[in-house]
Length: 298
Image 1 (tube, rainbow, N blue to C red):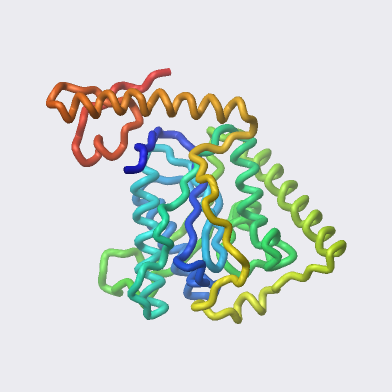
Image 2: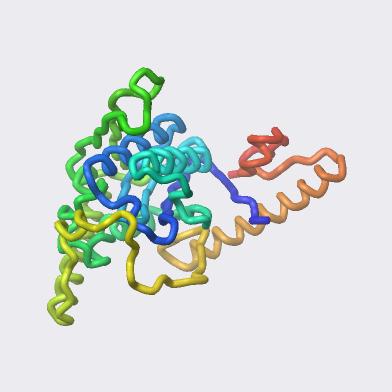
């Protein structure tokens, strides 16, 4: 059994998930890009999630969010279900779209950590040598929209949703820099500087090594049934927290350890029929069993 997660409101997360067998099931094209934006906007609106930056490559995605109300698990589940069903309908598939591994959800601690992860996600197609500039990526990448303040829009995918159903005909997704992160302009400038630095560094590396980028045309020409020929790293760590310095990460881990200790004690009392007060941040048992939760501590 996996350890319980502590779900707290007003938290930043980076969500990552890859497709089954690393297949290019999210390979960019007009219908795919539209469907992903539509599903993301619908899920974010439903659960009150602030989407900061979505980046979708051909076989995985990185999405940075701010969870104001402590509903990230519901949002993540709904978003991934919508995308899986919508894309399977588009591809004529019936099997699972996502890898059997659970989604990787990393809590981001501190302003600098969020900026670092935004730069990482936005520049991922460049680091993967798919394109030489971030804005050349033909798939979903909210970087330009975040920089310019323009919203992402999508129409209801006709290949999956019914025209006379309850789903909206069009959706608008505003990428948001939450005030909890600081000045939006400062964040945007820091992300822009970071992305441009990555573009320069990767270009220098390519010149020194002779490596070449795949390019937009080749990306669009890939078959969605294919997968990378490179060897996939296995048995890597799956972090729960990311922080700019080790001290902040250690403090987060210690807080999580205290949460687990309180949770285990409350669960033992609950199972033995005694009254139990679960620690603040308990998610699953509170949502599905309605166990009592302790008030937040400062």
